[in-house]
Amino acid sequence: MTGIDRIPLAHSVRYVAHGLPEVPNHYGPGVLAPSEITLTYRAAPDSQLGRVHAYVAGRLWVDGKEVPLLPGGLYGQHYLDGLDNWPEWLAEEARLHDPEAAAVSAAVAPPTDPTHGLSVQHADALYDAIATPGPARESFDDQHARVCAVVRQILDDLLPTPAEPTDRAAVLHEVADELTRKANKLTERVHDLAYFVAKDRLREAEILDREATELRRMADQTATETPKEQ
Image (tube, rainbow, N blue to C red; front, side, top):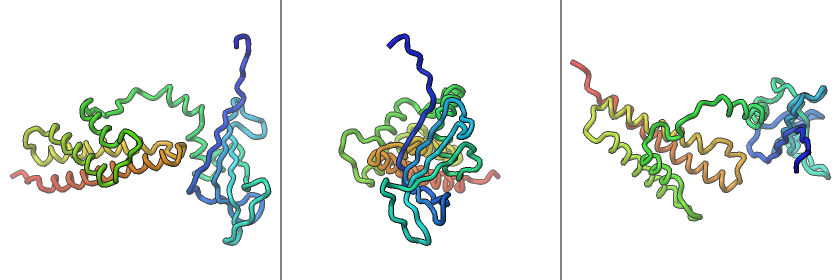
């Protein structure tokens, strides 16, 4: 509709997370085992609450025993602005979801090549190797074998003629670094995804990490085989 002035007051994100560190209970003895986080970012800082506010909810434990839940659900506690005084992991969560920081990052980030110099054919082949189409999921060993085959083909293409050991080691390291970058990309903000999607992403990243480790081992072995200059 036209003629309406909209003034954003705040941006809020709420999510469930697993495996977070325990935090001291602010209101008594024991520790809080967080499982739900709400982060609020105000467009303008509040005189008392500041710009960023966190509410952490979870189960309460005292002397190794869980305290029965409240009638309304989980226990919770507030964290006011001033990330320096927050638990480091919570401050990192706040930075991760901060829309202001994301906008600045997007504005200043230089354009990057998502394939890091790989040819279109090689990039597509590697993508197809790790992204199985359709609902069917292959076994870990099948997917591992397919990634190995693609990496082998890329190496053969990059080294069409027999190469010196030092050259081969450099190529192996280059391909390993590319696999590591793709694995890291798969796990970015994985906790924001649905469980089954996150599980698949982590599985694919594990495959790539295994391949990168093996390639680096081969590169180091190749480098040690380089004959010394007379």
